[in-house]
Each structure stands twice: as structure tokens, then as C-alpha cells.
Image (cartoon, rainbow, N blue to C red; front, top):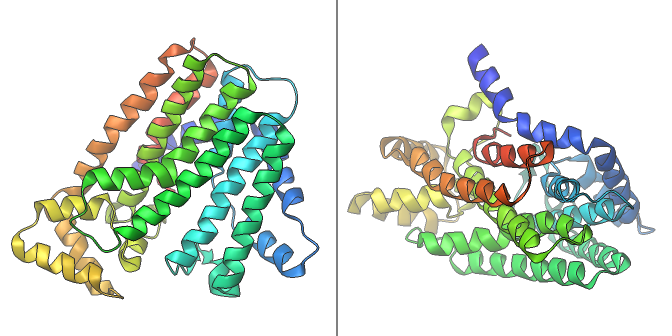
Length: 337
């Protein structure tokens, strides 16, 4: 067990390093979010405070702060304000996701829609987005406004694309990548690029950070989808199987379908067309995934995006900030929380 804990600490070290390097700014981000979400409407105030208590990695906010630091942005608090803005866009998408997926738990706690219902959750998600746009306008930079507003639109389109292919176990990998590129990677890309805009860097720097964020986001989502079927990591305390029970088609299922016999393909089609799936059915899927070495295949595909993300930072001079962001690529693939 000791060796496993050491491995976990080593893998997650880059995330901790990034968090520690911008800790003073992150405290201000949290305060900005709390202030921005306060409302005179009691239900809105109650729901947003509950959402804040559920926590989160704040990875997108950290990317904004980290990229700003890498690019030498030091004056003012625009990095704090836009890091909070990026985090609120993410929070809004989570609220809407939980309604669409009929989610009941997130980060080990009941979802807002489970407690207050779908209507309230959708409206509060819209409230968060409205606050985001206020913050974008307050920043006053048209490039930032265009970037974050277009990213919000891209995330929505990703949601619709996923809904369009709901239950399709024969989904093309290309379609899956389009979905996660829009739903997840686009906000990672925007969060990373914001720092270069704040520092008035040239386009090649902006493009490099945007490319870094996009590929980091793809790695992150593939890893997240893979963790959901990786029973070997249960000892780290992460619940598995949520995607299966919700009927989501992710990379492990796509690759499993590709490798399966005709009979197994038929079984997979049947399972994901059902409204509900059982624990025994999940156990059978896990056995099939192990038998076909699907977890390894998923991580191997993700490594391609890791290399792209890491290499995109070669344009920057060597620094502690660059080292941390490069290390974050490995964290995104091998993280355990």
C-alpha cells in the first residue's frame, strides 16, 4: 500500500505545485466568486452557496493564473477576475449537465437538481453564466470577450452533439473527440490563452497556450472517462461506474465495442439503449474491459495529446512556471482524483 500512496503523491505533485505557486491569487479568485454569486433572492443565494461548498479542483482557474504568470503578467487583478469567470462558466455547465444526465451526486454530495429540482438548477446555471458575461464586459478587452463568449457557445454545441449521439455504442472515435473537444477542451484552451492576452503577447504565444490547453483538456477528459471504468483505482477512493449507469458513451465503451465479438456488440447495444443498468451488468462490462485491455488502449491514445500539449510549451524559455505546466500534462492523464 505504501508504494501505491507514493505513486499517487508523485503523480499529483504537479497539480499541487501549480496550486501553491498561485495560492495568493487563488484565494482572491474564491473570494471573487463568492462575491459575484451573492444574490438578494434567497433560493439563488442558498443554491450557489451549496454549490461552492462542494469544492472542486479549480483547474481551469489555475490554468488562467498559471498561464498569466508564465507570460509575465504582474500588474492588476484581471487574471483573478478572469480566472473566476472561467470557473463560473465551468460551474454553469456542470449544473446543466446534471439536469441533462439526471445526475444525483457530484464530488460525493447530492447535486443541486436532486435537492431543488431541474427547473431551479437550470435557472441558477443561467444566473452563473449571466454573472460571467458581466465580468467579461467589466474586463473591457474585446479579445477576451470574444474568446470566452465563443467558448461558451462551443460548450453548448458539444452538449447538443453528445445528446444527438446518445446511446450509440458504435460511435466513431472522431465524433467522441469532437464532443470532448467542445465540451471540455475548449474551456481549457480559453483558460490557458487568457494569460497571454492579459500580458499582450504576440499571436504565436497565444496560439501555443491555446493549443496547450486544448490538448491538456482532451487528455483530462479521456483520463476522466477511463477512470470511470478503472476498478484498479478504487483504493484511491474514486467512485467508478457513473458514466455507465447514466448511459454515457465514452472512449472505453467505444474501444470495447470495436474489439468485441458480434454477440458482445449486440449485448452492448442492448445495455446502452436501456433506461437503467444494474450493478451486475456493470461488473460484466468491467470484466470485458479487462479482458480486452481497454484501459491500456485509452491511456495510449491519451498519451498522444500529452505529447502535443507538452511540446507546445517549447516556445517558452525554461522557467519554474513552464516546468509546472508541462508536469500538469502527466497529472491530467494519471491523476486519481
